[in-house]
Length: 160
Image (cartoon, rainbow, N blue to C red; front, side, top):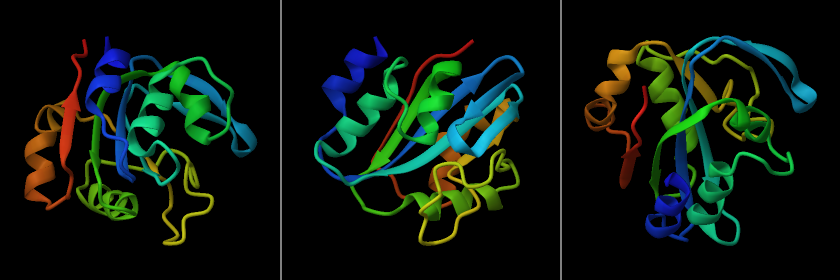
């Protein structure tokens, strides 16, 4: 269902995006050359850019697929967590700004240094953030607006 929704609604423009993933159980996961890390239950936000061919649609659609060749850090994490939300903007290079604003909210931490940020020119600590505050997730759309986080669409899928 999410896959079909993504195919129908996400544009092929270049831009920046965020994936919201949920982990319900503690787990240890090997993230490519970064090594093995412990992931606690919570909501994980992966913030990235889609500058290649197919733009936002191609990148978000790829991340919606669980089984695939592992190329990026997120490819190692994605099969272990449920995709519960997506947000994006057609504006370029917003992911670093989003990382900084979310970290400064006090609700997020960076569980793996350099995750998705090995080549980040703004030197972000990570492009993967985590929160265990469920009430924050329920009020996330409101938080985005209050924090002036520029995005064009937000889709939250149901979670248990």
